Image 1: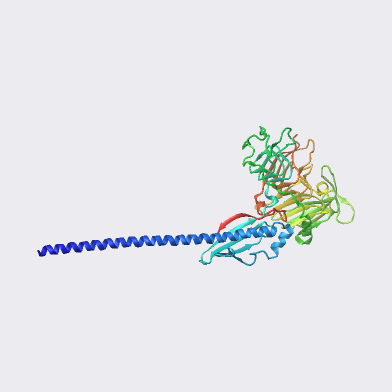
Image 2: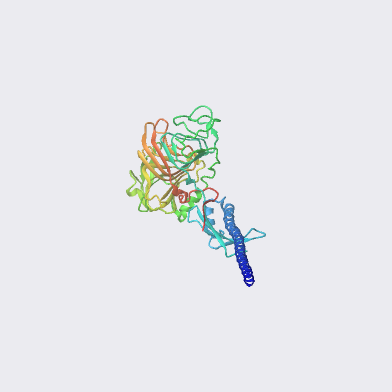
Length: 482
């Protein structure tokens, strides 16, 4: 009997132990579940706050974009320089803070701005956001704003334009007119026009961007063929206009800048100036006394003192000046230019601002007697040419010609006149071309340059020539979270 009672007691003790073990296991599981749920709730709250903090930082970026649009869109080059130089721009020199949103704020953003260097299009904005609920948790976004420049296209034109066979272009192309392209282009090509009358080809209207290479594109409203043999990156039309309005409105400002220490000014003595850029950081200049108005060849130069002329740009007809780095060489007359630069950024302007009709009588830039070259292709060498009327390759140009730089013909065209029976090998432009009228270095009968190679210089995106005209609005060019 006693043995039986002891056995029963042992069984009850075992059951109790098992029960305790099960209760402990269940408790551990329940505690773990509760801890997991609690951690997930905390993580969710933390993630939501992090997202709010990030949105506050982004709100600062978009506020600054709005601010720049309202403060700078209507400014010319002079006014824009004054805006940044004044030190009054928000976030420049002193951190700018603002509650967000207005009325019932949940937090704040803080903006620090790195103003652009002289004649740069780049503004760096750093925006840091935090919530009032958790002010120690911050997130920072940094963006680079860039104002588009006229030097961002391999070619941009304000007229119907034709690129013949033998043309190779690496860079964007746009025209506010129609485009006939029979060469090969490795970047996007766009036109303002949906259709237009190609005057080089009779018949009905053709697509805004079309080709006659090998086979002629079908006429609208047919489907647009891909034509990868011509338009490697494709074509788009119609697209918004690239406005040429007010193209030359900054010329008076450029002249004043050259006269007031940001460059060198030359008056309208004689027929213009011949400028030879040199890698030692200087340039030679001679006053042109006379030139052939058909071939643009210089006949004689004026002496610097007294009367008389020289047959070459040398001796008593020559002067030497330092190249104004990040500055302007402004000539109130025609310019003949060639040579090379080394670690210099300069814009050369040919303009007579008193001329009433610059489209017919404006001043020109003549190139081609010698190459125009950089020593470095990393952005440290930049040349801009701004002609009030035409930028013309002369009759007696090099058979193989290279031009490094951004070329801008404000009221005329970048190109070469028709010289019957005058054949050249190749012309290479490493930079960009902006032309009011139809561009061209060759003609349908083979006259001119057989090969035309236009290579866009990517450095011009961030280092346009000094004082080169830019677009209206700043756009976000680079975005990163720090």
